[in-house]
Length: 77
View 1 (cartoon, one colour):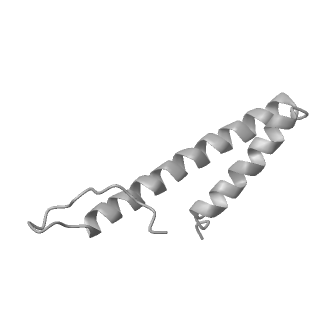
View 2 (cartoon, helix red, strand yellow):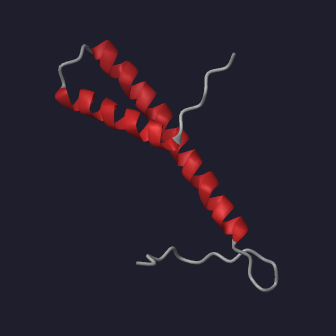
């Protein structure tokens, strides 16, 4: 059975943990490198998830001519 892909939020939480561990500077080099590698993979996955979400938003916002309209995100508060 394939492992479940972590959500965006889970990935960010794990990235935060990795950064805290690396900033302490008390890990052996091999552990630091492993964490760095894991972090770069998570960062890449998060970036892809954000790109995918942006594409969905653009796809959902079509103009009068049925072409996607890219509008800036604004706070509605």
